[in-house]
Image (tube, rainbow, N blue to C red; front, side, top):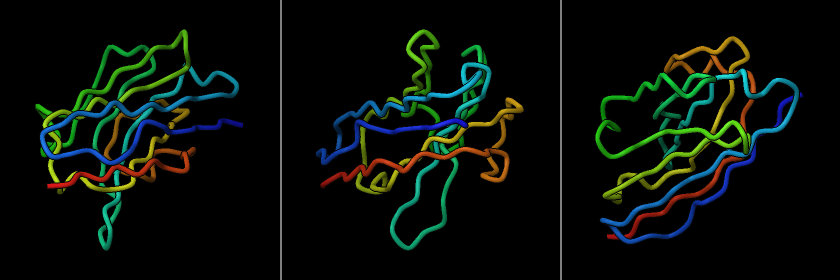
Length: 124
């Protein structure tokens, strides 16, 4: 069983930065790819970024390129999402998800394990 716990969300002013963390536990979790999705109020869940198990390959949704940076520290079993130049439209619940097949896809169906999410609110 794999467990994912997100943290690092909060209320921040537009233009600020946040670093979200996804702490993973469970058997062989360091061999899983980890992704970040977000879901804004009244909107569908949206893919943000994914990183392979080694941390050598990353893939971003087009709207996130340039402001979002995904990284991982396998020694700490943690994946990070750095978000810079935050905008009010970044307000959402951010989720991390894991794929045992090391998928690098934008589809939420590719990920078997999900965290509970962390709220990010950006004020203008």
